[in-house]
Image (cartoon, rainbow, N blue to C red; front, side, top):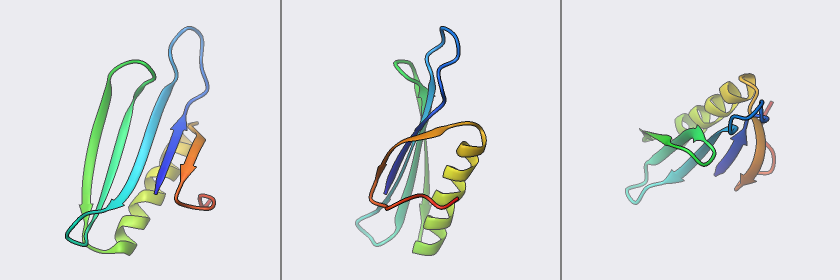
Length: 85
């Protein structure tokens, strides 16, 4: 599952973005990757591992919801019909 979110442009600064990716690893666990930064600039990557599918999905949804509260808008969704509100 992947969601790409971006803040609306403000002035001359490049907009900020966040890419949230949830994927299963080769051992049956789950990996949540969150990349944030300025479009065209530096970025930061954070990684979390989960053993249970439910815990990984909850963390994915909480991360997406937290960024939506900060004003980020969904630009691209892959692997899910529609994010929960």
